[in-house]
Amino acid sequence: PCEHECGMCTNVCPSLTTKHTDEDAIGSEIYGAVHGIQHCPETGYYLTCGAGGVSDPDRRSACASGGLASWFLEQLVRKEIVDAVVCVHHTYDGEKLFGYTIASTVEDIRKSRGSAYYPTEISAAVRYILEHEGKYAVIGLPCTIKALRLAQRKNKLLRERILVVVGLTCARMKSAHYTDYIAYLSGLNEKLRCVQYRNTDLSRPPKSHAYLFYGENGAHTMINYKSSGAIFSSGLFGLPACKYCDDMMAECADITFMDAWLPEYTQTEPRGTNIFVTRASLACTLLEEGNLSGELSIHPLPIEKVIKSQGGLTRRKRIHYLLTLRKKAGLYIPFRRFDDASIQLSWLERYQARRYVYLEEAGKKKWQHVKGDCKKFKRWIMFQRLISLPYSVAGTGYRILKNQVIRRVSP
Image 1 (cartoon, rainbow, N blue to C red):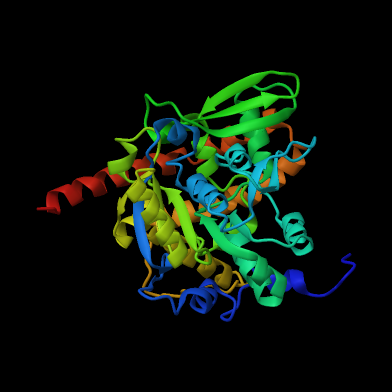
Image 2 (image 1 turned 90 degrees about the vertical axis):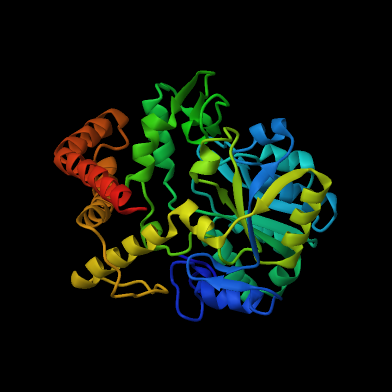
C-alpha cells in the first residue's frame, strides 16, 4: 500500500484522462499563445515540421535514425540552456536492462543514443530533480511526457527546474518479456545482459535493422527485424493502456522526434532520417542554427506527410473501433478525444483490431501459464498463426485487389 496516499499518482496518470487533463488541454495551456502556432487533431499543436538528420555520416550511423534527437539534447547542454538531461540508458542490475539517468555531459548523452523498446519509469529521476537544484531537460515517450506535464501543474519546483521537454513518437510499448522472447528466438541460451535494438546495415534500407543481444557469459546473437517484426506489430507482449492511447506524437513536448517512415526516405537513406514537430520557439531556433552552421541537413515537411509517416489516421480508426467493442460488452470506456460515428473500417481492419486485442490478452495468460518458457510459448504462437492463415491469405488478396483498383482509377 502507498505510504503517502496523497493522490498524486492518480492525478498525473496519463491513462486516467479527463477533458481537463487531455493532451489538447495541456497543449493549449503551454503552447496556445505561441506566435504562429497551429493545431491538428493527429499531431496536436505544432509550429514547424521538417525532416533530415545530422550531416556527419559517422554520427548519423551511430544513432537509431537521423541523429537529430541526440544532437538537440547535446546542444541544450553545450549552450548551457540546461545543466543536465534526463534520458534512458543501459542500466543492467540483474533484472532491468534500461532506466532513466541524469546525463550532465555530451559524452553521457552519447552513451544513451539508440532506441529502447523496453518499459521504464521516471519516478527516481523526478525525485532527483526535486532534491537537486538546477535546469533540466527531459526526453521520453508520450505517456511519460504527459504525466510529467500533469506533475508540473501540481508542483512548482518541477515547473521551475524542467525547462525543456522532448518527446519521441510511440505507437505501442512492449513489456520486458518481449525482449526476453526475441533474445530466445535469436538463439541466446544464457541470461540477457544487454541489447541493441537498432543495429543498422548501411547496405540495406533502414527498416532492415537487426537486434543484437549480449549474454551474461559473453555470448552474443543477432536477429533481423524481418524475423521479429511480426511479434512487435502484433498485440503480443503489449501493455493494456497502449491500445487505447490516442497520443502518438508526444503532443505535450516542446519538440517531438520520429522515424521518417516514408518511401522517399526509407529507400534512399540507409542511416535513417528523422521527422520533427516543434511547438516551442527555442526548439525552432536551435534547429535553424544547426542547419545554417551545416551541422544539420534538414528541410520543411508538410504536416500531412508527418501524419502519413506514422499511420496516425489508421491508428485513430482502430482505437475508435476498440472503444465501440468495449461499449457493446458493457466494459469501462476510457475517455478519448474523438468519437466520430462516421469512422468506418474495412472487414480486414476490423479483424486485425480484434486479433490485436485477442493476442494481447491471450498471450499474457499463456505466458503466465507456461511460466515464461519461451519454447512452449513459441509453439503456441505457431498454432495461432496456423489458425489465422485463411484470414491472412484473404487479407493479402484484398490488399492486392484494392491496390489494383486504385491504380486503374488514378489518372
